[in-house]
Length: 172
Ligand SMILES: [Zn+2]
Ligand SMILES: [Zn+2]
Image 1 (cartoon, rainbow, N blue to C red):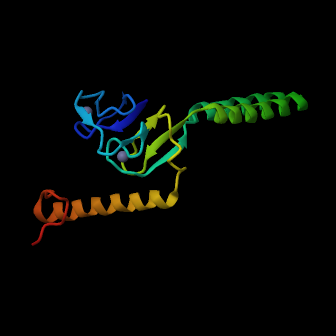
Image 2: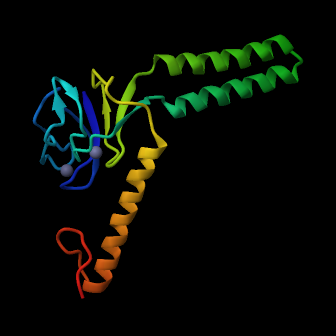
Image 3: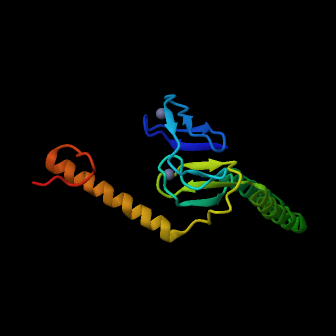
């Protein structure tokens, strides 16, 4: 399978290959060893995010949005031409075909797993049954957590001039 993630060492985003159950992978940018989080694997299935260890991952359709949009745009442009020449049947045939191709594309593309916390993406994972689809509630929880953390960093950075270890505001 492969993982697209932000390297904790160099903070660059890259895609790395990792064997299912492997204990570590190499960052494609800086070649640093990125160890898999504790308890990430369980019986050959991905339970937690390898990068941040969060147990909350959601299943997302790996839909190529640009290709999907391109098909719609081309179909619409072609139907405008046929409409201009009063080829009514052909116009509707093109519009239906466009919708059909997009739908077929949606059905055949694979699924990927995405981490709510660090947004790492996992493809060709194998077993993803234990993870659910996107939940706005969980997403919101992680978003607020990240916002609070950023605020704490800002406040403590403003009072002490640096971020203290542990991420808590420094006592004055
Ligand atoms: Zn790196
Ligand atoms: Zn993560």
